[in-house]
Length: 65
Image 1 (cartoon, rainbow, N blue to C red):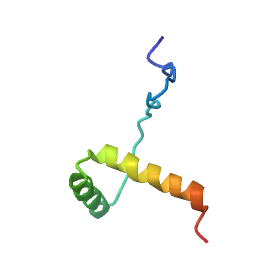
Image 2: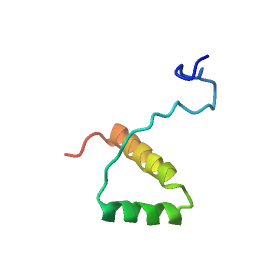
Image 3: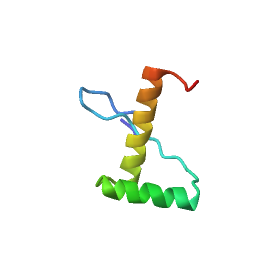
Image 4: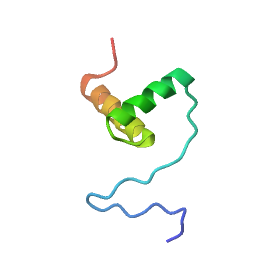
């Protein structure tokens, strides 16, 4: 298997991650860093958690009206 091929999915195995650039205002980044520190998560892990929760809520409740 080459480095570019996705890993086979197995029960409990995480999805492949794709890096991308995210530009944020300095104040928002600082707030997110503080929040991730409070939750004892890395900034990247916390952003993933927050985004997954938002997507889950959106799927359950639908778009805001």
